[in-house]
Amino acid sequence: MYRFLLSRQWVILTLVSLVLIPVMVELGYWQLHRHERRVAQNELIADNLAARPVPVTELTSPGHTVPRADYWRHATATGTYDTAHEVVVRRRTDNDERVGVHVLTPLVLADGRAVLVNRGWVPAAADQTAYPAVPPAPKGEVTVTGRLMADETTDASGIKDLSGLPPRQIMLIDSEQQARSLGRPVLGGYLQQTAPEPAGGTPELIADPDHDSIGAHMAYAVQWWLFAAGVPVGWVVLVRREKRDRSAAAAEPATEPAAQPATEPATGPAAEETPATAGAPTS
Image (cartoon, rainbow, N blue to C red; front, side, top):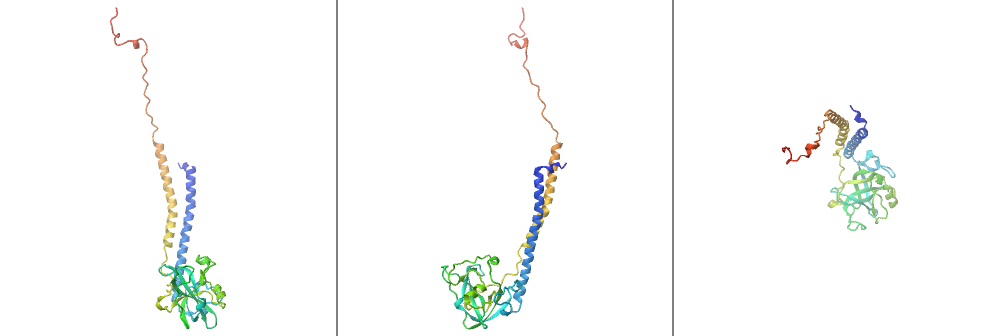
């Protein structure tokens, strides 16, 4: 009855179905884990943004790698800006996705160490080799509040650290790299300035990271699991349809049209009579 399942076509179809089921289940779990990581990250961002600001020296030090648990923690730093070693970070977008640069200025603390401060976004110069127009940093002693971020790497950001850039332009924010340029110890990581607001609104401060959206990962997970459940259902439907079609074909009678007898021409003397002679009187 189901011997057709042993045919090459059905064996291949069955094997493909058996492979698709675990693959789709695994893809569903992959999306579920992405959803869980997104939810956990949103909670971490919300908690750290709401936490009371602490001195930056309590969270990091020269050569320190900022752990993920401290990302976006508000920290304060008091010192004077070293504008002579200010640089811009290329290919960065503002809050409206316009491409420009971030302004990175070292803030020298009272003990001689420095912390890098990302003062915000400004448009790039028309000539990519030129240094853009950057509003000057405040003079004298200032207190800055910002979100603590880890040093950037190519692996984490996907940004390639290009060489041969124009003077005072960089691709990645790296405290150790800047320490070599400054000739003084630099705290690990950097601060994304949130206060005070710059005069005239420029550089444009970087907005808080999005921590409300969770994306559609959970919906994608459910879709993959529904697809996995639909594979065996579809296989059964196809098997039943094939069985029904084969049974219907077997039940049809093998009828062929009856052969018609061939008409042979008459032979013998009578066939040789012509209408003119047939029935004529004989003498």
